Structure formats: C-alpha cells, structure tokens
Length: 477
Ligand code: SF4
Image 1 (tube, helix red, strand yellow):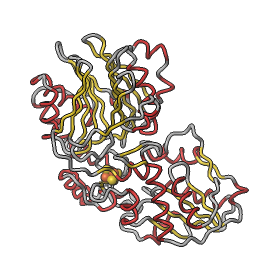
Image 2 (image 1 turned 90 degrees about the vertical axis):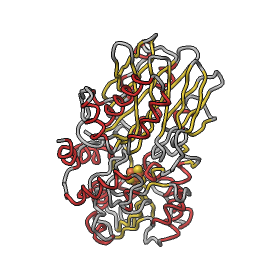
Image 3 (image 1 turned 135 degrees about the horizontal axis):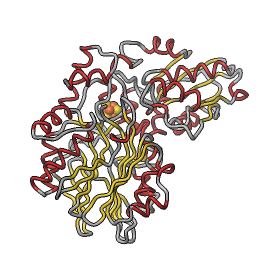
C-alpha cells in the first residue's frame, strides 16, 4: 500500500471546540478522500484518536465530538491510491511510548519511504502497514523523542524525505504544528477567527465554512507552530515551488483558492484556452459534472453554443477517479452518471471533461450518449494528455495503464469512441493557471521535480510492470 491524496486539518481553540471546527473542516474536505476519516485531540497529557472507515458525516456525531472536546486537535480524510482501504492505514497516526506521544496526518506521497522504513527498522521500529504515512509518523516520533524540538524534527524530515507532504501533527507537550515540503505540491493554509481560534486546512474552503475568510498560505519549506496559544512561522528551506497542476484541473474544490488562484477561475480560463485553440462541430455543450462546468461556461461564452446539463450526477456516489480498484471504478461510473435522453437525442454534442487517465470512464460516458441517440460526440479535455504516473499523491496509474502513452490523439479518440478529441495544449494550461515555472507537470511530461521520483519513473517504465503495487512488492524485498 503506498501513498494517498487526502485532506488534512488542525485546530487550536480557546474554549475546547477544536473537534467541532475539525469536523466542519473535514466535511468541507470530503472530496479529497472518502475511504476513511479521523480526528486526534489532546486530552491532558494524552492524545486520543478516533477514526473510522467511510464518510465524516456518517461517522462523527455530537456524542463522539463531545468525547473529543479539546483545545488542540488534527483531522484527516483519506483515500488510497492502490490496494484496499483499511482502518490501520487511516490517519491520524498515533505513535507513543511511556513519555512521548505524537499524532500525525499528512497529504501527499513519500517517494523514498522504503529506504526510511528500512533505516527505522534497523533501529528497532516495527510497522503494521506498508504505508508511507506510518513511516513519516515514526520518523517524526523518533526525531521528536531524541530532540524534543519540533523545528529540529522538521528540519531533519526535510533533509531525509523526497516527495510531496503537507503535514499536521500534535505532541503531548501541547504543541500543534504544520509544515509543507519545499516544493509545495499540495496546498496548506491557515486562518484565525475573531475569537482567536487558529485553523489549518488543506483547502481554503474548510476555513470558509468555519467563518475564517482571512487566510494565508503556509509556504513551501515553512513550519507553523502553535504553542501556549501563540503561533510562529519559520522558513526552514527556500521555497522551490512546483504546485500540482492537477489540484487546479481536477482535485480541489472550485470555491477554494490555491496559491492565490481561485480554482473556479482557473477552470474557466482552461475553457477559454480550449475555445481559442479549436473550432467545435457541435450544437450543444455537455459538461461532465462537476469539475468541467466552469470550462463549459467559458466555451459557451466564446462559441455561442448553449450549455446543456445532459449528464446528471448522483451526488451520493464517491468520485470515480479515486476508487482504489478498477472493479469499483467500473461499477461506480454506471451508478454515478445518467443521461437526460431528450436533451441528447439527435444532437451533435461537445463533451467537456477535465482529464483522461485510463480512458474507461470516458469510454462509458460516450457509449451512454450514443445509446441516448447523440448524432456526434466531440470531446474537449481541459488538461493535456497524461503520459506518466504521479509519485506525489494523486492516483494516476503506472505507465501501462495510461491511455495516452504511446498513442496519438486519433488513436485515443478511436479507443474511447469519440468522433473527435481535442486536448488542452501545454501552453494553454500554463497560461490558464498563470503560475509559470512554478508548476509540477510531471504526469504530462515525464519530467519530475524531485530526483527520486525521476529515478522511480524511469525504472518503472523500463520494467514495464502492469501493476504499480507489484513494483512496491519487488522494491520492498
Ligand atoms: S505528477 Fe501530475 S498529478 Fe502528480 S503532483 Fe505532478 S502535476 Fe500533480
């Protein structure tokens, strides 16, 4: 089991309401992971952890939150990128001995976690899971136990890890900290409400729902420490920003702001870029809900074609893309989207979606549209072709599973059953996000911002493995 993209949050409060703020925050971050959720709080000198499989609202109720009453806490929603979901892999991860306790939750993926795990094993640590989260938590614990100084702990973590990690952690010494790797792949923000409560969250939407509109970014390479009610920020490394372009294209909520860019506006710009590049042969625009709506609106404005909600999403099904196995993904597409046949029949459709990874979802959607009587299906994708895996916490499969690897656009169109397929250009993507030279484009180019990810990608490609999990089995030996 390796890696996850998740949502994290942390709170320091004045009057023991941390668990309530964390709950609100986790509900707002639910789209970042639906397999498990958890909260850890400080109770005196002890850390209490409460975690479950499934959605936040289905697990935490008033009674449970009341038992977690505290001024300090952290929370997490999780999905796994490979393997199955299990409670032992859910966060926050709690590590303790007689004197020291820590709880930690993270969002991202540690590329060199096997090496660190081996080193920790050599000094006596044992592991219950194969997750990188457990390795990070035990590394944090080990450093904290030896130094008792969270700045030294994070400095050492920065020295040792390769990968993406936005982290919140709690110690039994009443410290609450957050930090973000020097590349800042994943978002991390903080804000303070009118009562002086401090909240940290992966996405700004989680601060909004807690009525904190004044938020700031925790910078790449920075540590944020709350102790005795005061907070301190410290730059431990110079930032080398490579923000994940997929946070903008797909993953973050449209009402969030990531590095000063409103996600909705970026997605609108992606639509504008497509409409500047291509001329559609269509009568109506149909967005694949929900991520592509802003792009569809922009294309409509520029082409004069109407946007028609010809695909209706069942809101109670999880995001297809983040289900851990192909079987679950297949079943979910059918249950998740339905066609309004009267809107589609005999029409030429311009279908808008954010990305094509394996191609299975898109193929099924086109089949459904044709079955409903669509005369023509032209597909526009707001992101360029994905040709390489992600090693930083987004579930983009190994090379062999990617539909765009080693195929031209016509071949991909044929495979998914589209009459025409148009991808965003790389220039269009970069213009739309407007963070030139500060983006990770690894899955689009095969060039990764960190050394170990590049080595891993080249190695996996050479071995032509069909399953990513198999790679880790081999490497773990
Ligand atoms: S490889 Fe792709 S999905 Fe992964 S962090 Fe980079 S841009 Fe994001």
